[in-house]
Length: 437
Image (tube, rainbow, N blue to C red; front, side, top):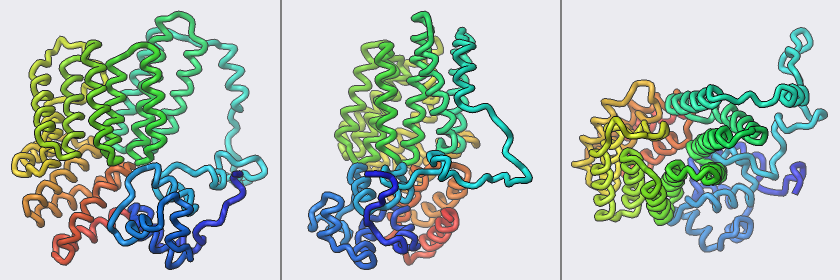
């Protein structure tokens, strides 16, 4: 299927309507299917044929009895109804028109500078390649240190503002490092560069995960796993598996999340996983069990995480990627896991304490903690307090580019449906609409 031949899908006027834009932004497939039938002229049987679902299943989704969470099904809906990827938080679909970056010279957009202010001349990509070949790779220990330093800076900026804007730079650096690996002489440098490439691939996967583009995230996480395996870096492989476990909880695959988290622990335990690493991995297992609702397994994993944490020593050779997991992080993760089990009374002080101690620059972390605290307060029947907590955190959504954060606040709005006539719930709805404009 070529990019130029856009198969018949939903009418353009429907795709441009506020109702469809809103439904896609919230991944409200009940509304999407109803709009497709009522205003797009595609009955449920036709929708089912296009997205590989039975007509009865489409009807259940349209009536609100079921929802779609599996990323593969979401992608089938986008492709079957020809909904552009960005409307559903996906990457550009293969059948969509090429973006400006991919346009051929004949399709290139007019210059943004105009005739009076021509764009500054820059060397072409071919010249860059020629000069790079002529210079040859200049590898030294300081080169590797500089690359690691840039990764730490990327993670800091990701915490502060989200990873969407960082991704082009991270992917560019990943390609640069892969090029260095091909040219490198000496096993020591190759090992170090493989480690850097693995970290950059994991970071790229994380930015896609944070954008809820799960297929792309999985692809880069898998690449990071393979790079780490190439140099037998088992602790880092465990780290990537833990990321994939967390993603599985978001994709409503809790049994996969448990399997990935336990595999991560096995991988690290047998190959020098420090107490801090093992504590973090045990908490990932706790999240997975809590998603299923397995109280006994969740508490067992939490206890294991705390036991490992008590064994941490300043002399431990902790890898840089786990240093974020401090006492405050252990506390808030414990609170979140217990909150997912419905143990709101025990969970609330833990999450509230972590929120008070959160660094002001960690905008995304503070937003997440606020979401979980608001949910826990709602569990306890404190509607006004829950709406206040969530409302006070909404301005943070304007400072970070994270579809995951936005999705959580939309999820909180759904939990307010039974209280939608209450003043606090109405006020939060007004605040949310203003924040998402």
